[in-house]
Length: 145
Image 1 (spheres, rainbow, N blue to C red):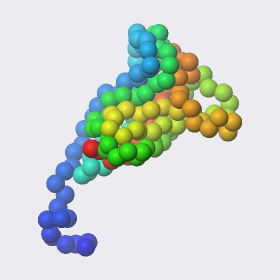
Image 2: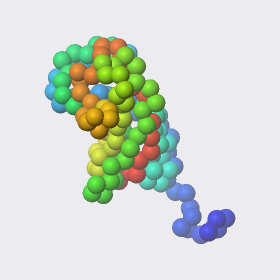
Image 3: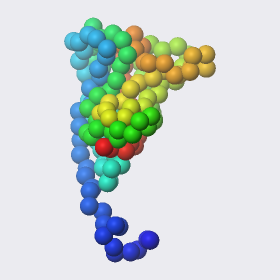
Image 4: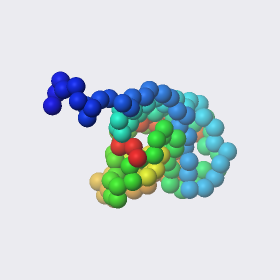
């Protein structure tokens, strides 16, 4: 009921903040960043976020990659995969016609990065598709735990 003053319409959880996104891989280390900036707005259990993360060096990363550090753990509902938008992906080692995508699995605080193409569909993005000067701009909304 819009305009109602009842307790069920009370906005009692509103938060604005920043966090530091990191790139993790199945294995390896030694990578450094050129930029790590992220902001969020949480209203109730909905978290809106924007991330810009860029690498300066790749180190020894290998295997599937995630962007870690989301400010809240996602809802734990089974099979609730929450998609994100990749608004920018520069200096990556991907094939022409491939698209960078991502989603958030239940009960995590990370964006699982994917590569999509018409032949294979969505597969895990790996460190081999990153580069020492690769950048990712990711935004989205998710339901927090």
